[in-house]
Length: 168
Ligand SMILES: [Zn+2]
Ligand SMILES: [Zn+2]
Image 1 (cartoon, rainbow, N blue to C red):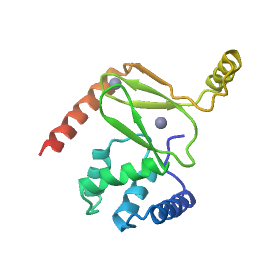
Image 2: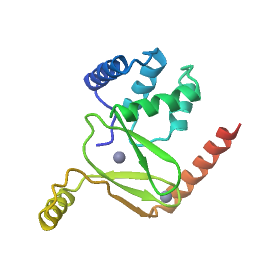
Image 3: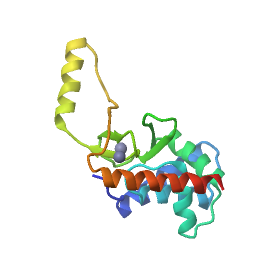
Image 4: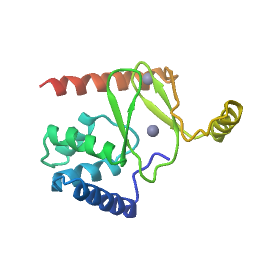
């Protein structure tokens, strides 16, 4: 499930974005499309700074403000989904051609796991019938800690480095 989007998908989302920007009289800058492409080539969840640093390290000149601003536009037009897992920070993930899934989040390192379980869909249907509601979607997050303590510590150290870097 968590793998980069196909080329056709990237081509399609660019077209959707182009149409959206045109209809909303917003500027179609190459930087905005680069941010979109970076997101669709990414795996799973990321915060705005992850994208900013990844693009910077990949040699793309794009300002942090452009990344933040483009993410807002992408959320508005439905190509990117914004999630908040416990803490105040927002996480983003691509929304187009991405399977419906739920999340398990580590409270210590912030690691996000995605899973699909058809039984959750069954619970959704059952609850809808029981309460006389047409349930259209859901958002389900489980919180806990990693059983692999070593990997968890490693991730905690890494995110510490990232936030140090962000303060520079
Ligand atoms: Zn997800
Ligand atoms: Zn962890």
